[in-house]
Image 1 (tube, helix red, strand yellow):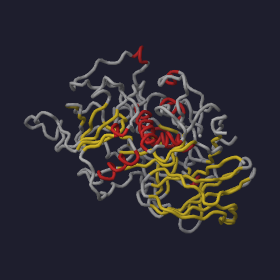
Image 2 (spheres, rainbow, N blue to C red):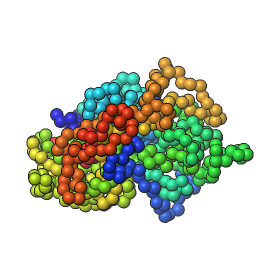
Image 3 (cartoon, rainbow, N blue to C red):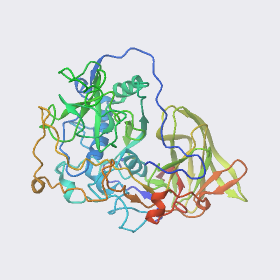
Length: 513
Protein backbone atom coordinates (compact mmCIF):
# COMPACT_ATOMS: atom_id res chain seq x y z
CA UNK A 1 0.00 0.00 0.00
CA UNK A 2 1.23 3.47 -0.79
CA UNK A 3 3.19 4.95 2.10
CA UNK A 4 1.04 8.08 1.84
CA UNK A 5 -2.24 6.25 2.40
CA UNK A 6 -3.60 5.80 5.87
CA UNK A 7 -5.61 2.58 5.91
CA UNK A 8 -7.94 2.62 8.88
CA UNK A 9 -9.32 -0.77 9.80
CA UNK A 10 -12.26 -1.05 12.16
CA UNK A 11 -13.87 -3.98 13.91
CA UNK A 12 -17.43 -4.59 14.91
CA UNK A 13 -17.54 -1.38 16.93
CA UNK A 14 -18.04 0.81 13.88
CA UNK A 15 -19.71 -1.80 11.45
CA UNK A 16 -13.75 5.80 14.23
CA UNK A 17 8.72 25.21 14.57
CA UNK A 18 9.91 27.81 14.11
CA UNK A 19 10.88 27.72 10.52
CA UNK A 20 13.39 29.49 8.35
CA UNK A 21 11.92 31.27 5.36
CA UNK A 22 12.68 30.23 1.78
CA UNK A 23 12.67 32.74 -1.04
CA UNK A 24 8.95 33.29 -0.67
CA UNK A 25 7.83 35.19 2.38
CA UNK A 26 6.54 32.45 4.64
CA UNK A 27 4.47 32.65 7.77
CA UNK A 28 3.63 30.21 10.54
CA UNK A 29 2.54 32.70 13.20
CA UNK A 30 -1.23 33.15 13.59
CA UNK A 31 -2.21 36.80 13.95
CA UNK A 32 -3.20 38.16 17.31
CA UNK A 33 -6.88 37.57 17.89
CA UNK A 34 -9.05 40.68 17.85
CA UNK A 35 -11.24 41.50 20.84
CA UNK A 36 -14.77 40.18 20.81
CA UNK A 37 -17.60 42.28 22.16
CA UNK A 38 -19.76 41.00 24.96
CA UNK A 39 -19.57 40.74 28.73
CA UNK A 40 -17.66 37.83 30.20
CA UNK A 41 -17.63 36.63 33.80
CA UNK A 42 -14.72 37.74 35.97
CA UNK A 43 -14.20 34.11 36.98
CA UNK A 44 -14.90 30.86 35.17
CA UNK A 45 -14.15 27.21 35.90
CA UNK A 46 -15.00 24.33 33.55
CA UNK A 47 -15.10 22.00 36.55
CA UNK A 48 -18.35 23.63 37.63
CA UNK A 49 -20.02 22.36 34.45
CA UNK A 50 -18.43 18.90 34.68
CA UNK A 51 -16.23 19.49 31.65
CA UNK A 52 -12.84 18.48 33.07
CA UNK A 53 -11.59 14.91 33.38
CA UNK A 54 -9.56 13.83 36.43
CA UNK A 55 -5.95 14.87 36.99
CA UNK A 56 -3.39 12.46 35.56
CA UNK A 57 0.28 11.97 36.34
CA UNK A 58 2.48 11.91 33.26
CA UNK A 59 5.39 9.56 32.74
CA UNK A 60 8.45 10.88 30.95
CA UNK A 61 8.37 14.02 28.83
CA UNK A 62 4.80 13.50 27.67
CA UNK A 63 3.19 16.71 28.94
CA UNK A 64 2.24 17.68 25.38
CA UNK A 65 0.17 14.52 24.94
CA UNK A 66 -1.61 15.25 28.21
CA UNK A 67 -2.32 18.85 27.23
CA UNK A 68 -3.79 17.55 23.97
CA UNK A 69 -5.98 14.89 25.51
CA UNK A 70 -7.12 17.15 28.35
CA UNK A 71 -8.50 19.53 25.71
CA UNK A 72 -10.13 16.75 23.69
CA UNK A 73 -11.70 15.10 26.72
CA UNK A 74 -13.04 18.43 27.97
CA UNK A 75 -14.64 19.19 24.62
CA UNK A 76 -16.26 15.76 24.54
CA UNK A 77 -17.93 16.48 27.87
CA UNK A 78 -18.84 20.15 27.40
CA UNK A 79 -20.31 19.64 23.92
CA UNK A 80 -22.28 16.57 24.94
CA UNK A 81 -20.50 14.62 22.19
CA UNK A 82 -19.46 11.84 24.57
CA UNK A 83 -23.08 11.01 25.29
CA UNK A 84 -24.15 11.54 21.69
CA UNK A 85 -21.60 8.92 20.67
CA UNK A 86 -23.29 6.47 23.00
CA UNK A 87 -20.51 6.47 25.55
CA UNK A 88 -20.86 6.45 29.32
CA UNK A 89 -18.53 7.29 32.18
CA UNK A 90 -15.52 9.56 31.76
CA UNK A 91 -13.61 9.94 28.47
CA UNK A 92 -10.16 8.35 28.64
CA UNK A 93 -8.11 9.15 25.56
CA UNK A 94 -4.69 7.57 25.19
CA UNK A 95 -1.76 9.95 25.65
CA UNK A 96 0.75 7.20 25.02
CA UNK A 97 -0.61 6.02 21.68
CA UNK A 98 0.02 9.59 20.53
CA UNK A 99 3.42 9.45 22.24
CA UNK A 100 4.52 6.36 20.27
CA UNK A 101 2.72 6.80 16.95
CA UNK A 102 2.81 10.56 16.32
CA UNK A 103 4.99 9.99 13.23
CA UNK A 104 7.83 12.33 14.25
CA UNK A 105 9.95 10.10 16.46
CA UNK A 106 12.63 7.54 15.72
CA UNK A 107 10.21 4.74 16.50
CA UNK A 108 7.88 5.73 13.66
CA UNK A 109 8.37 8.10 10.74
CA UNK A 110 6.80 6.75 7.57
CA UNK A 111 8.83 9.15 5.45
CA UNK A 112 12.22 7.71 6.37
CA UNK A 113 13.97 4.76 7.97
CA UNK A 114 16.74 7.05 9.22
CA UNK A 115 16.56 6.39 12.95
CA UNK A 116 19.40 8.81 13.63
CA UNK A 117 16.98 11.73 13.19
CA UNK A 118 13.67 12.52 14.77
CA UNK A 119 12.11 13.13 18.13
CA UNK A 120 12.87 10.68 20.92
CA UNK A 121 9.83 8.84 22.24
CA UNK A 122 8.76 10.12 25.69
CA UNK A 123 10.89 13.22 25.12
CA UNK A 124 8.48 15.96 24.06
CA UNK A 125 6.38 17.16 21.15
CA UNK A 126 3.92 19.97 20.42
CA UNK A 127 0.35 20.65 19.35
CA UNK A 128 1.14 20.70 15.63
CA UNK A 129 2.61 17.21 16.03
CA UNK A 130 -0.66 16.16 17.64
CA UNK A 131 -2.65 17.75 14.80
CA UNK A 132 -0.64 15.82 12.19
CA UNK A 133 -1.30 12.52 14.03
CA UNK A 134 -5.01 13.27 14.14
CA UNK A 135 -5.17 14.38 10.49
CA UNK A 136 -3.64 11.10 9.26
CA UNK A 137 -6.27 9.09 11.11
CA UNK A 138 -3.80 7.41 13.46
CA UNK A 139 -5.72 8.64 16.50
CA UNK A 140 -7.37 9.63 18.79
CA UNK A 141 -7.55 6.19 20.47
CA UNK A 142 -9.86 5.69 23.41
CA UNK A 143 -7.98 3.73 26.06
CA UNK A 144 -9.27 0.15 25.96
CA UNK A 145 -10.91 -1.37 29.00
CA UNK A 146 -8.40 -3.09 31.23
CA UNK A 147 -5.45 -0.97 30.08
CA UNK A 148 -4.03 1.32 32.74
CA UNK A 149 -3.60 5.00 31.88
CA UNK A 150 0.20 4.52 31.84
CA UNK A 151 0.03 0.96 30.52
CA UNK A 152 1.23 1.95 27.08
CA UNK A 153 4.12 4.09 28.30
CA UNK A 154 6.75 1.35 28.62
CA UNK A 155 5.04 -1.16 26.34
CA UNK A 156 4.43 0.22 22.84
CA UNK A 157 0.83 -0.40 21.78
CA UNK A 158 -0.16 -1.62 18.35
CA UNK A 159 -0.50 1.22 15.86
CA UNK A 160 -3.80 -0.13 14.61
CA UNK A 161 -6.14 -2.71 16.07
CA UNK A 162 -9.67 -3.62 14.95
CA UNK A 163 -10.75 -3.35 18.57
CA UNK A 164 -9.69 0.27 18.93
CA UNK A 165 -12.37 2.92 19.24
CA UNK A 166 -11.02 5.98 17.43
CA UNK A 167 -12.13 9.59 17.39
CA UNK A 168 -11.55 12.16 14.68
CA UNK A 169 -11.06 15.85 15.50
CA UNK A 170 -12.38 17.91 12.60
CA UNK A 171 -10.91 21.23 13.73
CA UNK A 172 -7.68 22.07 15.57
CA UNK A 173 -7.40 25.84 15.96
CA UNK A 174 -4.67 28.18 17.22
CA UNK A 175 -5.16 31.48 19.07
CA UNK A 176 -2.93 34.15 20.58
CA UNK A 177 -3.43 37.37 22.47
CA UNK A 178 -1.36 40.55 22.59
CA UNK A 179 0.97 41.73 25.32
CA UNK A 180 -1.72 44.09 26.60
CA UNK A 181 -4.34 41.33 26.60
CA UNK A 182 -5.69 42.20 23.13
CA UNK A 183 -7.85 39.27 22.10
CA UNK A 184 -8.22 37.73 25.55
CA UNK A 185 -12.01 37.86 25.19
CA UNK A 186 -11.92 35.54 22.19
CA UNK A 187 -9.77 33.01 24.00
CA UNK A 188 -12.09 33.07 27.00
CA UNK A 189 -15.08 32.53 24.75
CA UNK A 190 -13.37 29.53 23.17
CA UNK A 191 -12.94 28.02 26.64
CA UNK A 192 -16.59 28.61 27.52
CA UNK A 193 -17.89 27.31 24.19
CA UNK A 194 -15.53 24.45 23.35
CA UNK A 195 -13.77 23.43 26.56
CA UNK A 196 -10.18 23.28 27.76
CA UNK A 197 -7.47 24.77 25.55
CA UNK A 198 -3.96 23.42 25.28
CA UNK A 199 -1.26 25.91 26.23
CA UNK A 200 2.39 26.06 27.28
CA UNK A 201 4.72 27.84 29.67
CA UNK A 202 8.25 27.75 31.04
CA UNK A 203 7.47 25.49 33.97
CA UNK A 204 9.08 26.31 37.30
CA UNK A 205 9.54 30.00 36.55
CA UNK A 206 8.56 32.47 39.25
CA UNK A 207 5.97 30.40 41.03
CA UNK A 208 4.35 32.07 44.03
CA UNK A 209 1.08 31.05 45.65
CA UNK A 210 0.71 28.51 42.80
CA UNK A 211 0.64 31.33 40.27
CA UNK A 212 3.24 30.98 37.53
CA UNK A 213 4.61 34.04 35.80
CA UNK A 214 7.42 34.65 33.33
CA UNK A 215 7.98 38.28 32.28
CA UNK A 216 7.31 38.92 28.62
CA UNK A 217 10.72 40.50 28.09
CA UNK A 218 12.64 37.64 29.74
CA UNK A 219 14.58 34.86 28.06
CA UNK A 220 13.42 31.26 28.07
CA UNK A 221 11.24 29.25 25.71
CA UNK A 222 8.26 27.13 26.78
CA UNK A 223 9.05 23.67 28.11
CA UNK A 224 5.75 22.41 29.47
CA UNK A 225 2.25 21.73 28.16
CA UNK A 226 -0.88 22.19 30.24
CA UNK A 227 -4.54 23.06 29.65
CA UNK A 228 -6.52 26.23 30.35
CA UNK A 229 -9.80 25.34 32.09
CA UNK A 230 -10.88 28.77 33.31
CA UNK A 231 -9.70 32.10 34.70
CA UNK A 232 -9.94 34.64 37.49
CA UNK A 233 -9.54 38.32 36.58
CA UNK A 234 -8.67 39.16 40.18
CA UNK A 235 -6.21 36.37 40.91
CA UNK A 236 -2.98 37.82 42.29
CA UNK A 237 -0.21 37.03 44.71
CA UNK A 238 -1.45 37.09 48.25
CA UNK A 239 1.52 39.05 49.51
CA UNK A 240 2.47 42.57 48.43
CA UNK A 241 5.49 42.54 46.12
CA UNK A 242 8.84 43.27 47.69
CA UNK A 243 10.66 46.47 46.73
CA UNK A 244 11.95 46.19 43.19
CA UNK A 245 10.15 42.86 42.72
CA UNK A 246 7.28 43.98 40.49
CA UNK A 247 7.75 42.87 36.90
CA UNK A 248 10.57 40.51 37.79
CA UNK A 249 9.02 37.65 39.70
CA UNK A 250 5.45 38.87 40.03
CA UNK A 251 2.96 39.88 37.39
CA UNK A 252 2.32 43.61 36.98
CA UNK A 253 -1.46 43.29 37.27
CA UNK A 254 -4.09 40.82 38.53
CA UNK A 255 -5.59 38.09 36.38
CA UNK A 256 -4.65 34.46 35.79
CA UNK A 257 -5.62 31.37 33.83
CA UNK A 258 -6.81 28.35 35.78
CA UNK A 259 -4.63 25.43 34.67
CA UNK A 260 -5.03 21.67 34.63
CA UNK A 261 -1.60 20.07 35.02
CA UNK A 262 -0.36 16.49 34.52
CA UNK A 263 1.89 16.11 37.58
CA UNK A 264 -0.63 14.29 39.74
CA UNK A 265 -2.94 15.47 42.50
CA UNK A 266 -0.14 16.28 44.96
CA UNK A 267 1.17 19.13 42.80
CA UNK A 268 -0.13 22.67 43.14
CA UNK A 269 -3.76 22.88 44.25
CA UNK A 270 -4.65 19.19 44.00
CA UNK A 271 -3.21 19.05 40.48
CA UNK A 272 -4.31 22.51 39.35
CA UNK A 273 -2.54 25.88 39.44
CA UNK A 274 -2.61 29.33 37.85
CA UNK A 275 -0.64 31.17 35.17
CA UNK A 276 -0.71 34.94 34.99
CA UNK A 277 -2.40 36.64 32.05
CA UNK A 278 0.93 38.45 31.63
CA UNK A 279 3.02 35.30 31.26
CA UNK A 280 5.44 35.31 28.32
CA UNK A 281 4.05 32.19 26.59
CA UNK A 282 0.65 31.09 27.89
CA UNK A 283 -2.03 32.28 25.46
CA UNK A 284 0.71 34.18 23.58
CA UNK A 285 3.03 31.65 21.98
CA UNK A 286 2.21 31.50 18.24
CA UNK A 287 2.02 27.71 18.09
CA UNK A 288 1.36 26.66 21.66
CA UNK A 289 -0.42 29.64 23.21
CA UNK A 290 -4.08 28.55 23.14
CA UNK A 291 -5.26 25.57 21.07
CA UNK A 292 -8.71 24.04 20.71
CA UNK A 293 -9.53 20.52 19.56
CA UNK A 294 -13.19 20.55 18.61
CA UNK A 295 -15.95 19.09 16.41
CA UNK A 296 -15.17 15.53 17.37
CA UNK A 297 -16.80 12.43 15.88
CA UNK A 298 -16.10 8.75 15.39
CA UNK A 299 -13.38 8.15 12.84
CA UNK A 300 -15.44 6.70 10.01
CA UNK A 301 -13.07 7.27 7.08
CA UNK A 302 -11.55 4.03 5.78
CA UNK A 303 -8.83 5.76 3.78
CA UNK A 304 -7.23 9.14 4.17
CA UNK A 305 -5.14 10.12 1.15
CA UNK A 306 -2.27 12.47 1.91
CA UNK A 307 1.31 13.38 1.06
CA UNK A 308 2.01 15.43 4.22
CA UNK A 309 2.83 12.87 6.88
CA UNK A 310 3.97 15.62 9.27
CA UNK A 311 1.26 18.20 8.66
CA UNK A 312 1.84 21.93 9.00
CA UNK A 313 5.59 22.58 9.25
CA UNK A 314 5.81 25.80 7.21
CA UNK A 315 3.67 28.20 5.19
CA UNK A 316 4.02 29.43 1.60
CA UNK A 317 2.30 32.73 2.28
CA UNK A 318 2.34 33.88 -1.38
CA UNK A 319 0.83 30.65 -2.69
CA UNK A 320 -2.93 30.94 -2.60
CA UNK A 321 -3.77 28.06 -4.94
CA UNK A 322 -2.50 24.49 -4.88
CA UNK A 323 -3.54 20.90 -5.41
CA UNK A 324 -2.54 17.37 -4.50
CA UNK A 325 -2.70 14.48 -6.97
CA UNK A 326 -3.88 11.10 -5.71
CA UNK A 327 -4.47 7.64 -7.19
CA UNK A 328 -7.38 5.62 -5.86
CA UNK A 329 -6.56 2.21 -4.45
CA UNK A 330 -10.06 0.78 -4.76
CA UNK A 331 -13.77 1.52 -5.03
CA UNK A 332 -14.34 4.39 -2.66
CA UNK A 333 -16.36 7.52 -2.03
CA UNK A 334 -14.55 10.75 -1.19
CA UNK A 335 -16.68 12.51 1.41
CA UNK A 336 -14.50 15.29 2.79
CA UNK A 337 -11.29 17.27 2.34
CA UNK A 338 -9.00 18.68 5.01
CA UNK A 339 -6.47 21.52 4.92
CA UNK A 340 -4.91 24.22 7.09
CA UNK A 341 -5.40 27.98 7.18
CA UNK A 342 -2.45 30.01 8.47
CA UNK A 343 -4.41 33.12 9.49
CA UNK A 344 -7.86 34.00 10.77
CA UNK A 345 -10.79 34.81 8.47
CA UNK A 346 -10.03 32.95 5.25
CA UNK A 347 -12.38 32.29 2.35
CA UNK A 348 -11.74 29.11 0.41
CA UNK A 349 -12.69 27.50 -2.88
CA UNK A 350 -12.55 23.71 -2.93
CA UNK A 351 -12.45 21.89 -6.26
CA UNK A 352 -11.93 18.29 -7.33
CA UNK A 353 -10.83 17.38 -10.87
CA UNK A 354 -10.40 14.08 -12.65
CA UNK A 355 -7.73 15.19 -15.14
CA UNK A 356 -4.44 17.08 -15.16
CA UNK A 357 -2.99 17.18 -18.65
CA UNK A 358 -0.62 19.59 -20.40
CA UNK A 359 -0.45 21.71 -17.28
CA UNK A 360 -4.22 22.14 -17.04
CA UNK A 361 -6.81 20.76 -14.62
CA UNK A 362 -10.06 19.63 -16.20
CA UNK A 363 -13.16 17.49 -15.74
CA UNK A 364 -14.26 19.26 -12.57
CA UNK A 365 -16.59 17.22 -10.36
CA UNK A 366 -16.65 19.40 -7.21
CA UNK A 367 -16.72 23.14 -6.73
CA UNK A 368 -17.75 24.69 -3.45
CA UNK A 369 -16.85 27.72 -1.39
CA UNK A 370 -16.88 28.65 2.26
CA UNK A 371 -15.13 30.58 5.00
CA UNK A 372 -12.90 29.58 7.90
CA UNK A 373 -12.91 32.00 10.88
CA UNK A 374 -9.83 30.73 12.75
CA UNK A 375 -6.27 29.60 12.08
CA UNK A 376 -5.60 25.86 12.06
CA UNK A 377 -6.60 22.47 10.71
CA UNK A 378 -10.08 22.07 9.24
CA UNK A 379 -12.26 19.38 7.69
CA UNK A 380 -14.84 20.29 5.03
CA UNK A 381 -17.56 17.86 3.94
CA UNK A 382 -18.22 17.63 0.20
CA UNK A 383 -21.69 18.73 -0.79
CA UNK A 384 -21.55 16.10 -3.55
CA UNK A 385 -19.40 13.08 -2.62
CA UNK A 386 -17.13 11.77 -5.39
CA UNK A 387 -17.17 8.15 -6.51
CA UNK A 388 -13.77 6.59 -7.22
CA UNK A 389 -12.63 3.27 -8.60
CA UNK A 390 -9.26 1.58 -8.46
CA UNK A 391 -6.45 3.43 -10.29
CA UNK A 392 -8.54 6.57 -10.82
CA UNK A 393 -6.45 9.73 -10.65
CA UNK A 394 -8.08 12.64 -8.85
CA UNK A 395 -6.86 16.11 -7.98
CA UNK A 396 -7.93 18.06 -4.90
CA UNK A 397 -7.44 21.82 -5.34
CA UNK A 398 -7.81 24.45 -2.61
CA UNK A 399 -7.68 28.21 -3.17
CA UNK A 400 -7.28 30.43 -0.09
CA UNK A 401 -8.08 34.14 0.08
CA UNK A 402 -5.43 34.95 2.66
CA UNK A 403 -2.39 33.57 4.44
CA UNK A 404 -1.18 31.06 1.88
CA UNK A 405 -0.81 27.29 1.95
CA UNK A 406 0.56 25.13 4.73
CA UNK A 407 3.25 22.64 3.76
CA UNK A 408 5.03 19.70 5.26
CA UNK A 409 8.81 19.69 4.91
CA UNK A 410 11.91 18.55 6.75
CA UNK A 411 11.94 20.56 9.97
CA UNK A 412 13.30 20.95 13.47
CA UNK A 413 10.72 20.72 16.21
CA UNK A 414 10.73 23.01 19.26
CA UNK A 415 9.44 20.24 21.51
CA UNK A 416 7.75 20.86 24.83
CA UNK A 417 9.86 18.99 27.37
CA UNK A 418 9.92 19.94 31.02
CA UNK A 419 13.08 17.95 31.79
CA UNK A 420 11.29 16.10 34.59
CA UNK A 421 11.45 19.13 36.83
CA UNK A 422 9.65 18.29 40.08
CA UNK A 423 6.44 20.29 40.39
CA UNK A 424 6.11 22.90 43.14
CA UNK A 425 4.33 21.83 46.28
CA UNK A 426 1.29 23.64 47.63
CA UNK A 427 3.47 25.98 49.67
CA UNK A 428 5.34 27.17 46.63
CA UNK A 429 8.41 25.07 47.42
CA UNK A 430 9.82 22.15 45.47
CA UNK A 431 8.89 18.51 45.87
CA UNK A 432 11.58 15.82 46.00
CA UNK A 433 12.62 14.41 42.61
CA UNK A 434 10.46 11.51 41.40
CA UNK A 435 11.63 7.96 41.96
CA UNK A 436 12.74 7.21 38.41
CA UNK A 437 12.67 3.46 38.88
CA UNK A 438 9.19 3.56 40.36
CA UNK A 439 7.76 6.02 37.87
CA UNK A 440 9.77 4.87 34.86
CA UNK A 441 10.77 8.43 34.04
CA UNK A 442 14.20 8.49 32.37
CA UNK A 443 16.09 11.77 32.31
CA UNK A 444 16.03 13.60 28.98
CA UNK A 445 18.83 12.87 26.55
CA UNK A 446 21.23 15.64 25.69
CA UNK A 447 20.51 17.22 22.34
CA UNK A 448 16.86 16.25 22.43
CA UNK A 449 15.71 18.93 24.82
CA UNK A 450 13.17 21.53 23.88
CA UNK A 451 12.25 24.96 25.08
CA UNK A 452 15.68 26.51 24.79
CA UNK A 453 17.27 24.28 27.39
CA UNK A 454 20.62 24.34 25.63
CA UNK A 455 20.09 21.24 23.52
CA UNK A 456 19.37 21.11 19.81
CA UNK A 457 15.85 20.79 18.46
CA UNK A 458 15.22 17.33 16.98
CA UNK A 459 15.29 17.25 13.18
CA UNK A 460 12.43 15.37 11.56
CA UNK A 461 12.89 14.21 7.97
CA UNK A 462 10.05 14.59 5.48
CA UNK A 463 10.15 13.31 1.90
CA UNK A 464 8.20 13.98 -1.29
CA UNK A 465 7.99 12.65 -4.84
CA UNK A 466 7.51 14.38 -8.18
CA UNK A 467 3.90 14.72 -9.25
CA UNK A 468 2.36 14.82 -5.77
CA UNK A 469 1.86 18.52 -4.92
CA UNK A 470 1.50 21.48 -7.29
CA UNK A 471 1.28 25.22 -6.68
CA UNK A 472 0.16 28.01 -9.01
CA UNK A 473 2.68 30.84 -9.35
CA UNK A 474 0.18 33.20 -10.96
CA UNK A 475 0.99 32.01 -14.47
CA UNK A 476 1.14 28.23 -14.43
CA UNK A 477 1.15 25.12 -12.30
CA UNK A 478 4.52 24.07 -10.92
CA UNK A 479 5.59 20.91 -9.12
CA UNK A 480 6.46 21.74 -5.52
CA UNK A 481 9.06 18.96 -5.62
CA UNK A 482 11.18 21.14 -7.90
CA UNK A 483 11.10 24.23 -5.72
CA UNK A 484 14.52 25.30 -4.43
CA UNK A 485 14.43 26.47 -0.85
CA UNK A 486 16.96 28.72 0.82
CA UNK A 487 18.49 26.67 3.61
CA UNK A 488 18.77 28.10 7.14
CA UNK A 489 22.00 27.70 9.08
CA UNK A 490 20.73 24.80 11.20
CA UNK A 491 19.86 22.77 8.10
CA UNK A 492 23.26 23.42 6.50
CA UNK A 493 25.01 22.52 9.74
CA UNK A 494 23.04 19.30 10.02
CA UNK A 495 23.48 18.37 6.36
CA UNK A 496 19.76 18.29 5.57
CA UNK A 497 17.75 20.02 2.86
CA UNK A 498 14.16 21.13 2.39
CA UNK A 499 14.43 20.46 -1.35
CA UNK A 500 12.47 17.41 -2.40
CA UNK A 501 10.82 17.18 1.01
CA UNK A 502 7.82 19.52 0.72
CA UNK A 503 4.16 18.68 0.12
CA UNK A 504 0.93 20.62 0.46
CA UNK A 505 -1.23 19.82 3.47
CA UNK A 506 -4.37 18.79 1.58
CA UNK A 507 -6.04 15.45 2.30
CA UNK A 508 -8.92 13.47 0.81
CA UNK A 509 -11.14 11.57 3.25
CA UNK A 510 -12.77 8.44 1.81
CA UNK A 511 -14.92 5.49 2.73
CA UNK A 512 -14.96 2.11 1.02
CA UNK A 513 -17.90 1.24 -1.21
